[in-house]
Length: 242
Image 1 (cartoon, rainbow, N blue to C red):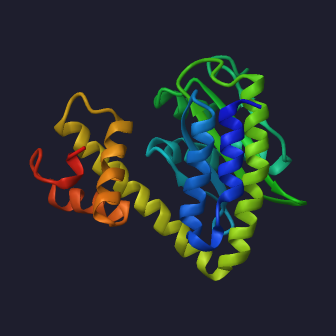
Image 2: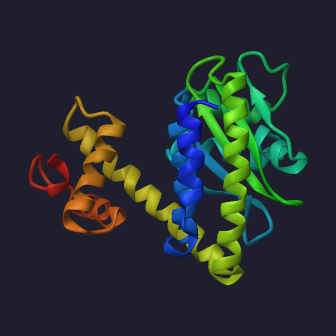
């Protein structure tokens, strides 16, 4: 396994469910996997919603749930097959899928996605969902990436199963909703910062938010909400400072 993969597994093994909400747990799992697989531009996790239907529990980019939604609407897609069948589904080139997953492919291509990797989240005999990775290049995921991703997904499934058991079903739906709302606010704040400074990338914008959160000892979501609410002029908000 690559150093990135080993580091990601180590990070997952150290993750303490009791110190994080279910939403934070899911987001951290996604971020650790993204760090380990550089080709992945975004990630999402599909799980069962409280209405008994698949839902995107958390995402690292606002486009991910929009892509996922095409699968849920049509009932066909790589993440759904990965979850239902407990297997890895890799699409190396969305231009050449033989007509499979047409609604999903159209939605993904509309967001510049050219290859995908869907990994089942299986803890024991329990299929808890699927981890979806999206790349903006053809052949974005190698056999090594698939191997690393599979190991991470196996470890992540245990983390998620433990988190679900720890927090209890009564809190799960509420926490997932809060996680999605938090991510939406963060994406909005990133967009505001990027619009204010043309040379700022999405990663740079997130880094500014993270640094402001650490500097002020305030939750990252609250920093983002402040920017969205106030939409301050350039340089007037502490989150714009390095």
